[in-house]
Length: 478
Image (cartoon, rainbow, N blue to C red; front, top):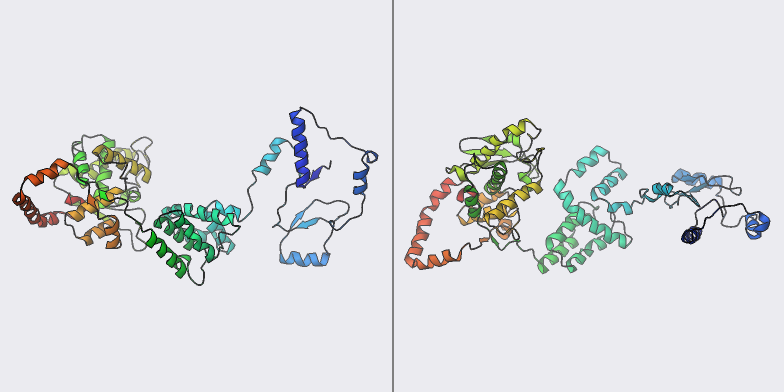
């Protein structure tokens, strides 16, 4: 046997031989075999070089190396006194001895792949970073370009990116330079009954990742826009909920817990989180990003800003959010928030948590993520009797907006508080009805008689102006 080789066939034979010996507990020992006892191998080793052994003309090779960089393989023998030069694009199998120690194989087995196409499947962000370096951009410029998308956007694009990479690699296509023809194969997602929003995320991801086609970004190309219109018409997006829960149920439950000064810190934390979510209509991720240093109390309201722009904000300074006070302190979001800040003041002095408003009530006290806020809100909803198998933590936003709309708050005010761009978005996804709470109450209305029923409507209408003067946002309507 030769000491080192790169042949797949010989490697397979060696593997079979090794397995054969291991099964029978045989020991393989390499010994020298004289040429007279191995005539065939001896004859082949002395044969003249054939077409498989060649050497490039030195002048030609010099020209090639001036155009393309090369890598040198230092394996040589008597027929090739000069080193054999290989282009780096060709996979170079590492030379191994016939009987390597097992641990010596670990660096070879776990050696990182240098295949630029295969490595694209790891991360979209890393693929973009390598693409920026390939174009000659500095690392600082690349980081700024990547910061053009927020972390939540990058996270939502990762799943779409993996789907796209898998689809391209199965067809031996480079995901970073696929043609429009393959981009239009997004129809495959429609055949798989994927929602319009899911297909639209893939479109947005490709538009922000791939180069332009025919002078258009992928997302704005006429054919892609027409394809998305077809997906929309055949499978239009539907609201997640056909009805909402009544925020009044949750507010009454949390108000019955007692005065803010006497309830436990975990209960006060959940109450402050829930009241703030309903009063401001901000998202769960935005609740986790409230800047504690910006929090300011006055007699009539509390004001604060976020540590990051809101989802629909792409310019101008960070928005300041204002929450008005209520006369009933037990259900006042400002009073509850003030009590939470006072209760946690001693904890903030002893730890570095002055950046975020909400932090963990369990030591070591640190800032919380959106997932923790979600858990707090779901706990409050479940304790209040809301079906958390139907409604998630984000439903506070729609429930507050629906309640405000049903109470007569102008749509323009609701759009401003909820930071919705258009009325159509609010009407489609958030302007929903409330689930009936108690059937007996419905029948009790009917037993009042028609005159009493309409008298109640008139009384509610007369008090509407008084309610509007008291209410500055959705929660005060409760």
